Image 1 (cartoon, rainbow, N blue to C red):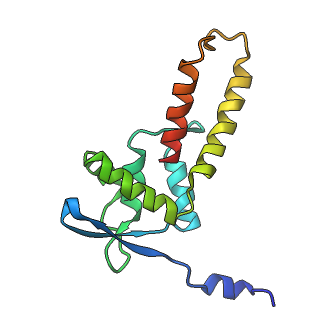
Image 2 (image 1 turned 90 degrees about the vertical axis):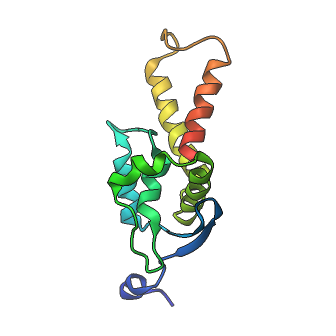
Image 3 (image 1 turned 135 degrees about the horizontal axis):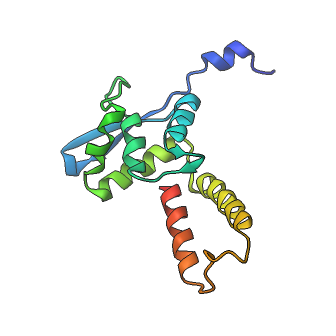
Length: 150
């Protein structure tokens, strides 16, 4: 039997998970983004089609940290203040939020790899920005992949 349109729309698939944050003295709740919410988030961190990673983790977290009823506890404008908190805690919460919302390392890395490859192809091999030394390119790519995965 196939699912009907209404069965899909009515299916309860929202996920909220309690996460301990002992450093802050209690637990938090993280919700998975809906498809629309994820698209809105991804659009909010793009400028001229390029991902901007400034305060990326906190920008996601303000959208997914909720109370026990699923109501957001932060507004988008709180991202800067949240981003000033301990990076280890922010990274741990971000990893959980990414997992719940299907934003795996593989998905994010694949998207950036395709963009980087297109940029490198457009620049051409004779471009002065291409360095013959092997160490700068892997560091740049590692940072981009790391930031995208985070």
